[in-house]
Amino acid sequence: MTVKQRYEFGGPAGNVLMMIGLPAIVYYLYFCVRFNGGRIIPGPEIDHAAFSGFIDSIYPTWRAALIFFSWFAFQAALLALLPGRTVSGVRLDDGTSLKYKLNGLPSFIISMAAVAVLAYTGTVGIDIIYDNFGALISVMVLFAFAFSIFLFAYGKLTNLVDRPSGSVIHDFFMGVSLNPRIPPVHGFDLKFFCEARPGLIGWLVVSLSFMGVQYLKHGAVTAAMLLVVAFQFLYIADYFWNEPAILTTTDIVHDKFGFMLVFGDLVWVPMTYSLQAFYLIEHVHSLPVWGIVSIVFLNAAGYYLFRAVNLQKHRFRTEPGYLIRGKKPEFIQTAHGNRLLVSGFWGLSRHFNYVGDITMALAWCLPCLFYSPLPYFYVIYFTALLVHRQRRDDKKCAAKYGDDWVKYRERVPWRIMPGIY
Image 1 (cartoon, one colour):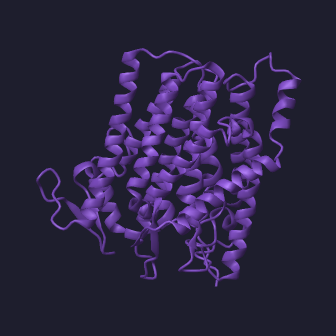
Image 2 (cartoon, helix red, strand yellow):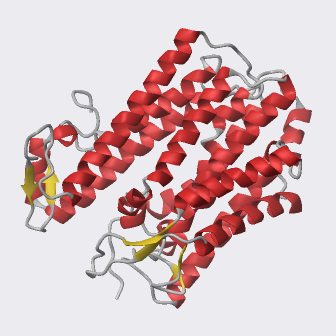
Image 3 (cartoon, helix red, strand yellow):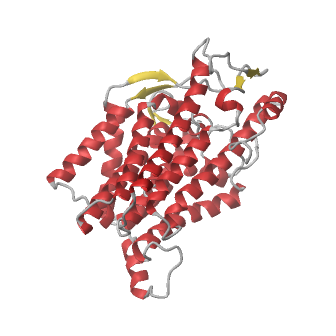
């Protein structure tokens, strides 16, 4: 029996617009960097040849397909074949917990080593991603749609439909299965794999490739490029160092695996999060020492908040007797059985960890300076994403905890930034 529920992301009409608009944004960002000098709006000097060059560059090619599918298969093989400890995920609504094999850190290290060897030996040119970027976008977009169709059909055929909405379009966009695995239950976890491996590590590989292209073009790597790539490297390395935390994220716990996550994981992350490095290939400039130090400090402050806030909640949940600043943590015991932390960082706002995320995002954009607003697309988009995610989380928690959530919001009124929002 189909149980209808409130639509998300604008319902079927909004979902269709996003399925058209998100790929269009990826293409447009690529056009702006590669064919429009890093500006947002095409200038009068942009001629027909520039637009023709852009169109020609985005035709999918067998070479681009080979690059993408080789990388995708390599990452799948690492997850499937490398040893790793098995842990239980969070408890699902039916009371069960799925098992996950965690080998992200060795997979990340091997991936970086493989890329370094291929580049150093000249087996694969460091500019291969740059030269095929437009075609790669098209291959990845086509794969995202094809893979989403497969997930929709696979969920229906295996009867793994979770909370259907009553709309085929909405279910295709949001997904029909929470945890699709091949084979079901104990097999290869498709969402867990796509959430981190091909797209997240691929993002860093793209940025590293752009750094290499800057060196090939100008004979040097700028401090701005080094800062951007180093910040991204540390963020992704930390992600895999703390891999168990992935299992408690909204994407893994609550969101079904459909086009929204598929496109975000496999296309949006590697092809837009690398925007700053892409921009810096041709925008070569010097940074003063005080500027470098300030940006490093800003990123470090953001990282500290991001990690410390999340760690505080993790330890509160997992360590009996855990103290916050030498005191017993304050919390609201819900009728549902959960404890809502209201002291420490989590007494400042309901998602104070997002302050760290936004601070780091800004630090990754500042090395590009202010010649164009284009490199700041990342921090603008990421802030909007986190605001929307917080609101989605608030609605889900209100439905889950009822009056206890009302008490919690009275105790912690600020959503993200205390005193502002």
